[in-house]
Picture (tube, helix red, strand yellow):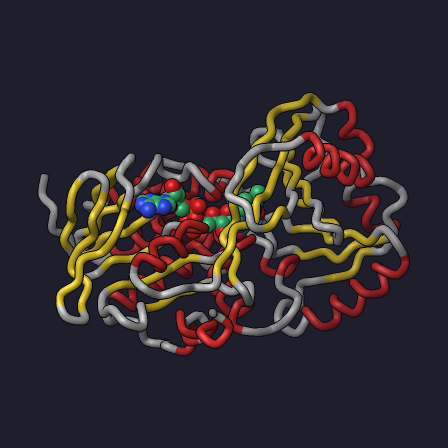
Length: 376
Ligand SMILES: Cc1cc2nc3c(=O)[nH]c(=O)nc-3n(C[C@H](O)[C@H](O)[C@H](O)COP(=O)(O)OP(=O)(O)OC[C@H]3O[C@@H](n4cnc5c(N)ncnc54)[C@H](O)[C@@H]3O)c2cc1C
């Protein structure tokens, strides 16, 4: 087996796969090293929301990154269909951030005014407008912020479409292969030791999601990252209950997928890699979801699952080169928004590695050394 590549990507989740796609398309010889199977972790657990406006309420580098990424989905879905035949189920019907009390309604109305600064399509829907739009919503909901540009995709299909498209452009995939440590020459990385032998390259990208901190530790540098488990469940009603994604202020969302399932998520359990789905977690989601849509109680039960989100101390991903080793890069820590941020992360990392990144400012907030002062 040939073991020399232009770029080795460690992790076959959505971030590694998007980077592989963009680099392969630029003609680089790429291999993805995946410990288990492609998209087997957070990238298949995600509900697939492209929730720029719902999740990012303040202007800043993360919002700017998300806006750029969100704008890529239209073209991306047709490109990936062309290269792989895979439909990523991009749905662009918007999101409703609902207000269950007058107090929340008043906060959301202020938020509408503020967020219209970067998305003028955002509007406030009063009781009548909201309930005409989504008839199954509980009458207890007073109104909602309508975010027409926050769509969703099928996250596992998007992740796998990125990988298949990378393969179309010549990338290699090695599953059931774990990256263990790095090989250096002077101040330059030039290989990675894996459970199946050494792979040589002068450019290596750590894109191992919540497990990236362990690989960084191996390289002698700590990043401030920790896992947050999220549990979800899904149901299939026998009629369409909702057309838009319903996003509650209390961190419960309902995403109507193309196959008729509604994905309902997600709990937030910090500092654990344990992926057990608990009755307590699911019960809390059922309680919240049926308060929003009472008819969900009659829907047919589908499944439960969980995943580990990669969180960082400031909630922003790490995207950039290792401070000590040339050629070693990280793209990880996308927390609740890795699906949304996958296209732009892949594009910018590919440009960084090929020396074609024109606008350095987009990545400057995500550099790896920003938490050094807080690390013991
Ligand atoms: C319940 C839940 C709901 C979510 N909903 C959304 C949503 O609606 N919208 C959104 O944008 N985001 C959402 N997210 C967040 C999103 O899923 C993540 O941000 C994103 O999937 C992270 O992708 P990743 O490729 O960095 O990590 P992962 O998908 O976790 O992939 C990392 C990969 O690296 C592999 N790996 C680890 N260590 C090694 C090693 N040493 N060697 C080789 N391979 C290794 C792992 O096996 C894994 O396959 C959600 C997450 C969860 C858990």
